[in-house]
Structures are given as C-alpha cells and as structure tokens.
Image 1 (cartoon, rainbow, N blue to C red):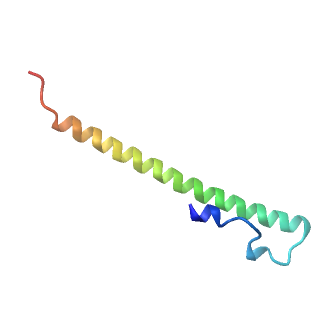
Image 2 (spheres, rainbow, N blue to C red):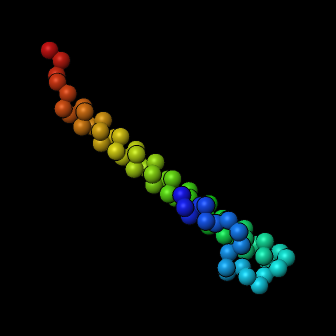
Length: 67
C-alpha cells in the first residue's frame, strides 16, 4: 500500500493555494487516496471469493461417491 503511505503532506497541485482553497485541495487528494485504496481492497476480496468458489466446485466434482 505504498500509494496510501505516499499521500501524506501537501500535494504539488495545491502549491500556491491558501486558506479554504488549500484545505479543499488537500481533502480532495485524501478522498482520491481513500477511493483508490478501497478499490484495491474490493478487487482483492472479489478475487479471493472467486478463487474460494472455484476451489469448492473443484473439490465437490472430484470427491469420491459414498458407497
């Protein structure tokens, strides 16, 4: 999660701004970081779910029938 760690401080695009404009620019950058990290986590969870479902289907298809 290097992207989340590198988001601290004032972004270069906010240089020259002061007061409310500077705070708004910083908040917008923080929101973008939050959305990006959330998407990475969501894709990770979706991939884990798909892999687990595939594993369960494989195990059910290859099990020995009861005698």
